[in-house]
Length: 174
Image (tube, rainbow, N blue to C red):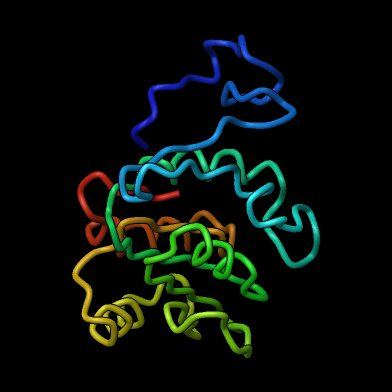
């Protein structure tokens, strides 16, 4: 990751380990948002943190810190482990021009709010699956890769070996 923040440095600004005040993180500014401030994911999307359909609430401040640094005007995002797909919707809402791709052993069967979201069935360590996804979507790299899949070290390491070389310079693998 690009951030130089260290958890060992302490936290002078509140109880959040990333230095945000615990009540409300600051708005984020990205040049590709046309100078508009983007407020934190939880506030902006009324995202149901810590529910069965979503990411745990403590993920979101970490995500938004790194999301603010993604400078691509049309980022290509891959998330592994999408469960019911709510996080794909969150990503598509947060990045209005992004292509959001999800992989899960049992992907959600649902109608997406935008054609920019696609879910694929497969295992996290399947190199052929990622080659197919990249070919079908005519992409050469990912700007953001989120691994929230099997939570097993060997499979996470295998997908990292497959996908990290396909991460755009300056991109994030979370």
